[in-house]
Amino acid sequence: MYTPSHFDETRPAVLAALIDAHPLGAIITHGAAGLGADHIPFEYGAPTPAAPWGTLRAHVARANPLWRQDGHEVMVLFQGAHGYISPSLYEEKPLSGKVVPTWNYAVVHGHGVLRAVDDPAWLLALLERLTARHEGARAAPWALADAPPAYIATLVRALVGIEIVLTRLDGKWKLSQNRSPADQLAIAAELPALQGQLPA
Image (tube, rainbow, N blue to C red):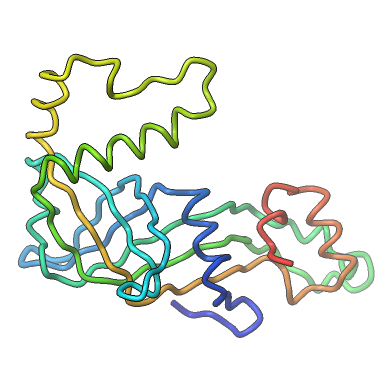
């Protein structure tokens, strides 16, 4: 990924925060049929001595050939907030007119080797964590225990887990850091959700 130095984001905690806030990843594979892509919600596991960049975990349908990429290198793309930036926001526009539009965004690319996990207990624990996280804010959160155990067991047999111990995280925060303070304020006023991605 082309990343000028002023857009480069390398702080692990900042990269992890984007993944946590935007967990739907696009996983890119390269197999016998060429390039492939799947869109999957991931869980990000914090770094450990064995996985200093952290670990991504997810599950797919057993019918999905993605898990057969076991042992192959993959890349997972996480897209944060993004938006069109009008040149009308720039202080230079009324002065010389020498401004053009752009697009601001924050992204993280995670690299690692995919491992297929065909283990019902591992999958059930992952499903419980994912459900607890995404249901937690609801007034009456749903839990796996709300469904008949036999039904859940049948569904789990139809899934395969995937785990990616990350070997690298690349981050690009293109958020007008190369513009003047006045331009940055104008952009923040029009696109607060986007500019809120800019780390302190």
